[in-house]
Image 1 (cartoon, rainbow, N blue to C red):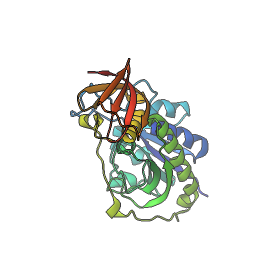
Image 2 (cartoon, rainbow, N blue to C red; image 1 turned 30 degrees about the vertical axis):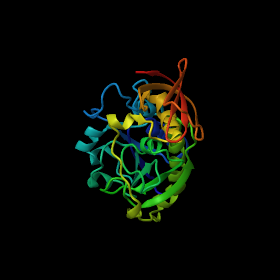
Image 3 (tube, one colour; image 1 turned 135 degrees about the vertical axis):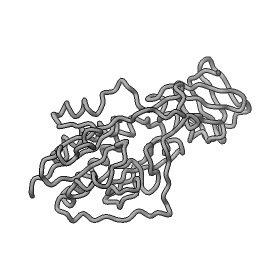
Length: 294
């Protein structure tokens, strides 16, 4: 097979960093890593609310440098894309990249440009698919490898695999597991991609759903959620993002840790306190948390 480089477009999140590390160890040779940050946080996000981009974790550049990979920031690459690449065949791969790829950039990839997306497309298209799957209390998720097109997350699928979202799984753990699964799927498909005969299947548009980046109101849980949904979402986000707020029937609670849920318990009062442990009535069931009544 002729020499073929992998052109990676990577964002700064846990998913991209873990996927890049696994690609280096188990995937084809990486030619260049084009990186980009998230830019300014939405003006709609209040600074008191968590943003799932902790600054203390090493960035995608650190990961690339650790493995001796060639890197270039998105703005520089966009200005002179062709001049930054060797004249060799290549395949493009997107890892939670926070920019839309223009058609001419995707076309630089001889064998096509593919995206590893942490959902079972066409469901949960958009920039924060794991957040919304936890938000909606999904019990099953998955990863899709699809061809990049001008429509976001809508390109034909080359591979897809389901993964259980266990109750209590946190967001960082989920990103690592989904990244591992996605990279393994891509690596399995890569020989067909590089040979130029990878088979793809169009997405079923009637099943499609799109979710934007979460804003302030999307972080507020209410007692109208089921106990299981609240437990899944809070468990997923609180460790990485800090305390979350939940509006009960008669108070606002700031939750710092989850202890459990009971789908069958019927509690007379909306909120029961046992020191710093609170039991909150949901619809149906109850959750038990550490937190403060505001």
